[in-house]
Image (tube, rainbow, N blue to C red; front, top):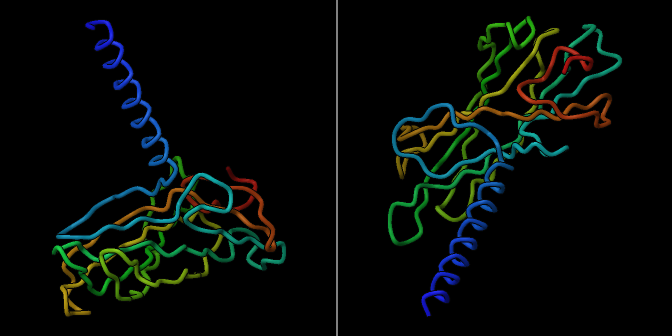
Amino acid sequence: MLGSNRRSGRLISAIALGVVLVLGSAAGAAADTLLDHHGPTGTASLRDQAVNHHGGARCDYSNHDARDGGAATIKVHAPAVLARDRTAGTDSQVVGWRVILQQTPDDINYGRWYTVFTSSVQKASATDSAKASFVDRNFHVPFNTFVRAHVQVLWYVPSSSSHVQGWQLRSVDHYDRFLDGAFEDQVAGSCPQDLTSP
């Protein structure tokens, strides 16, 4: 009887460890990074995976780019954002997101990043079970630089679309690179200044 209990205990421990490993690997697949937050917020995540065609942003390069280097545009994919779960019922509120673009003229291992553009806020209604209907956003990229994107997600005071209750700042970690509309590869950290850069 004692041996049977020990075997059962080991089996339960093995199953629990397996569940933890599976959940940990699933969590590692979506890899945007929470950089900062303030106030009460709901749930938010970026579509940002280390899988080709599933990066958080798309860098588009062109052989005909007259600027002689650098991505021509960057498309930042819309985040999945839910309202705060405040009550036992269905909760709703206005949420928003904006893109902050940063650049460095040097190699990303040595350069200093600085903000060159902050977009307007795109707003939509969300509930605590249905995400906001956001759309991807496209931006022109500064000349011949490494460019990275941060996404700020905003939750507004319920019944308001102007008073921010809380926010999160998240970084895009994976970038899909396209040349003249054809997929090339995926890189981590930023849109490099040209396709030959890692």
